[in-house]
Image (tube, rainbow, N blue to C red; front, side, top):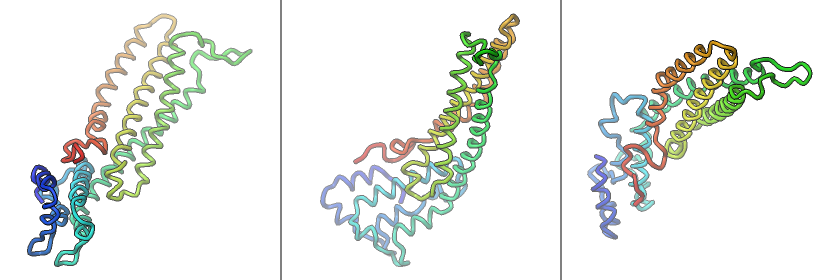
Length: 264
């Protein structure tokens, strides 16, 4: 009930005697799985929506790990109120689950809109060739310039990354949001989608800077240099929060702050 991992490990390592110990119940016929299903006081009130998904995943991992040391019959046992540990867990964590689902959907919806805009812009840029094209062949006039090559490569990268991020965000937003989804893939897919989205923003800025060098190719190079400097500064400033969000979202197998860093 108090999430003491050291005590859990002691019970786990005492051998066959643990099979008798874990069958014990309290006066309300709650076994250890019922106690693990109760939400701790620190998660009961004033939980930040941004941390709710991580907290719910940690709670699910704890409940799953405690369940593994119980006999299947004991894991499905009911207390005096006629509730199984699973039913008690769902009841106790409903508010936390709602906050986690709301936070994920809000973040995904905002990033999905941004990814769609980036995909639209870079797709249009691919057919608006800077410097014009040759009337005879239709090939770009500046095809051999380094700035034009950089423009083409970064535009393609931005388009692909934004499309991949859209697909990842769609897989998250249309998920069932069941308890197992928070453990297996939801947070991981969100992290991958955010990484792709931030990378597409960076690639789009490279497209913009390369275009400026093409436009101002004849003199006044200080203009694209100044614009590139401002673009890099803007990326560092406005992408900082997204980068922090990516770092804060843990991988399913190595949750930040999770009580189970190693399988025992």
